[in-house]
Length: 282
Image 1: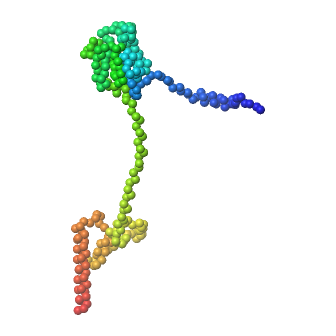
Image 2: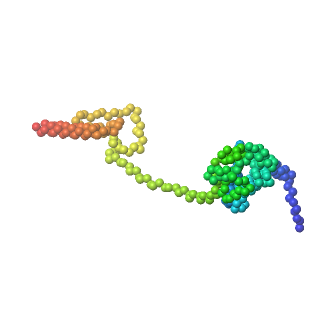
Image 3: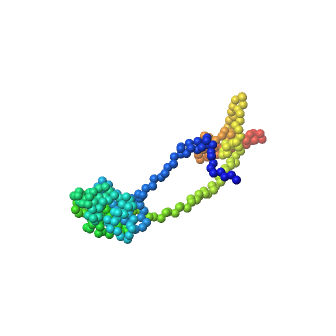
């Protein structure tokens, strides 16, 4: 029994596969540990705003306890969102945030500029903190801010931007249900159009149906024009009908005039016939 340990491809096939592998780029996605500053809050969380004077940064920080100190809130933001910070006075004071502030242990080395500490009401309002961050307790839904600038009180120190808790930590919302499929409405059947038929003959002038007959080919002798009948003859009405309709629809007055003319013509013909009959009798 023979065992095949490996498959050896012909040289042209192996060269073609190597060329295809070299032409197809392989992209490896970069993995970063940073989380967005404005994230959906699903558990106990607090908002942290850092205003360096040149711009403000906001962080939605997940709490690891029911309440944490203001110092630990900064530490959590550093672990979760890579906020750079530096403490002084044995870790009890804030010296440096987001690359701004003194490097050493003296947090007031750049006085009158230093980091002012503020508490937000969650609706855009701010209150100057009367105690240090090490002794302040931050709970779920709280909003803390640090602003770099001068001033020894809330009346003189720059305030943070007007932000609420929902501006930093987006509330988690349920995924909306998919809308029901749209139904196509069927239009009601249209009423059948009634075909108006004319009581006149196909050659009559008042026919409303278009003629489907092919037009007659004119004779070589030229068009034939019918001569009008004599006045008083009963064929006046037939001749007028054979001439076709006027260019536009006749008005009521014209119709009345035509009827009266036909009546007068018929009466004259009757009188003429009576007179001829009387002469023949006499």
